[in-house]
Every structure is written in structure tokens, then in C-alpha cells.
Length: 301
Ligand SMILES: Cc1cc2nc3c(=O)[nH]c(=O)nc-3n(C[C@H](O)[C@H](O)[C@H](O)COP(=O)(O)OP(=O)(O)OC[C@H]3O[C@@H](n4cnc5c(N)ncnc54)[C@H](O)[C@@H]3O)c2cc1C
Image (cartoon, rainbow, N blue to C red; front, side, top):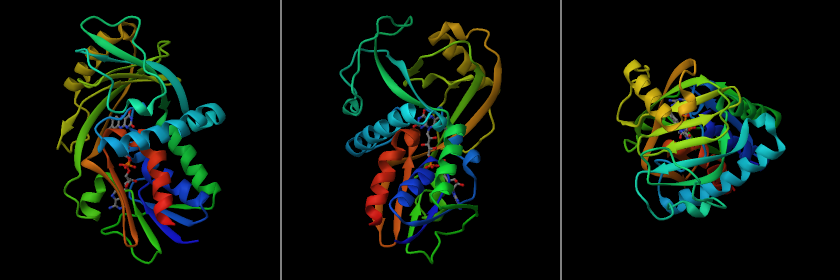
């Protein structure tokens, strides 16, 4: 059994902490932002490999995460995970996506919204992040782990192992300038009886239903650090989402949110001495978390 410090309390850090605790390690999570204050809390969060590479590792992590999320949807509804049917729409007909092996089945949709040439429908996990992050935090505590707010100037020393899950914060903590913010703005509207998700990754425009609200997105602004919602962007999101799903017309706006995706040319998941780095999951942290957490637990042995 090792004493492990996990830096970061977003979906990547908490999920890694759960798997490390289950493997018998003593785990303390430290983070500047507590779970509901992180980028992870802003995620839409549809299972979809978006803005994360390399293709082979991302496909494997996404496939494993999908399995774990599907099991949670079935066995632990309090985890905030639900399986929902949905459709990705495309402006041009193309072959299967590079991540096709990560889903059991992709089918052609029966109907498409106007202006689209093709699409692919599939069942994907949709994760209600505030619920899921609270559930992960409870799991960490039930398994004997701790969570402490701490703003670090460098990766800590003094543990057998440090797991660096600091997302965009790794720019500072590990001096990795390859991690860049890609700003994403979303609008939450009231539920209007929508069950299926919709995605036009080219926008990006997405409509992701939750139990009591619907998340509408989005934007994809490279190198932009502002977390202030822009009202003009919000209007554009509402317009694009309504063009995709006309039932949204007139839905009451509940709130606006902005998050900074930790994008890196490739996800960094590797062990360097006493540090395991696990960051740079871009627009797919929720999609990859369980696959990555299991690899982290393997590297900790
Ligand atoms: C609008 C939007 C929509 C998204 N939609 C989806 C989606 O549909 N599906 C999907 O899979 N992904 C989605 N994402 C991407 C997803 O949110 C990220 O990939 C994921 O949150 C990254 O998780 P993380 O744990 O690495 O980082 P974070 O959630 O940012 O957590 C990082 C942690 O590190 C801590 N930290 C950083 N610096 C320090 C320091 N100096 N000292 C101590 N602690 C530190 C932070 O405080 C925080 O606790 C979306 C993102 C956005 C913005």
C-alpha cells in the first residue's frame, strides 16, 4: 500500500482516486477548486471523444469508460449517469468515425434536421455532472480517502506517489505549456420533455437533456481565458440549438456557464518516477475518466 496524493478534484482526479483507493492505496486528494467549482462541473456531459488525442489510446479509454458508465446507469442511478439515445448530425456523408470501435452500434438516423446530409445515432451515457461529482466525492470518502482545498505552487513532495490531475493548472504545476484553454460557453434551459441528445460537432452545437434541464452549447475558443458568459454568444447558442431541435423554442433560460477545456496535442498519461501525470483531456474528460483512472491505478503498482 502506498500513500498517494492526487492533485485535482475534477472528474479525472476524483475518478483516479476512487480506483486507487479500491486498489488498496491510502489517498489524499488536494485541489484549489473543489469538485463543483471545476471545469468538470461545467461539462455537458455527453460521452463523446471530442478534442482529445491520440486516437488509439482515446478510443480504448473511451470504450472502457463507456462500459463503466453504462453499468453505473443501470446499477447506481444516484451516480447521475443515464444512457440516452441521440444523434450526431453531419454536413457531409463520411465513413465511420475514428472512435467507432468504442461504441457497440452506430446506426443511420431515420430523419435529419434541415440542412444536414448525414448522421449517426447511438446510445451514449449522459452524465449530470453536479450529481456525479458529488457521488464521486462520497465514494472517495466512503473508501477512506480525504479531500482538502489547497492551492499549490508546485507538485507536492512527501508522498510515495503523486498523481497530477490538475487539468489546465498543469501549465503552472508541471510547467507544461502544451496545455491550452479552449473556452466553452453553455446555456441551461428548462426541460421541455426532450429525451434524446443532438450534436453537430462542426458548430459545435449540442443539446444534452438532463432530468430537469437541458444543456445547450456551445463554443470552442482556443487560447481564450475569460470565464465570463458573453450574451451575444448565448444568443447564437440558443439560435443554433433551436435550429437543431425546434421544440426548444420558448424554453426558459435558467443560467449561463463557461469552462476552459484543458486541451493538449495529446493527453499526457505516463509515470515519471514518483509522479503519474494524467491531464490534457480536452473536450472529453468525462468520456475518458474511467479508462484513464484504471491505467493510473495500473501505473501505481
Ligand atoms: C462547456 C464544456 C462542455 C464540455 N462537455 C463535455 C462533454 O460533453 N463530454 C466530455 O467528456 N467532456 C466535456 N467537457 C470537457 C471536460 O469538462 C474536461 O475534459 C474535464 O472537466 C477535465 O477534467 P479535469 O479533472 O482534468 O480538470 P478540471 O475539472 O479542470 O479539474 C482540475 C483540478 O485541478 C485543480 N488544480 C489546478 N491547479 C491547481 C493548483 N495550482 N493547486 C491545486 N489544485 C489545482 C483544480 O482546482 C481542479 O480541482 C466539456 C467542457 C466544457 C468547458
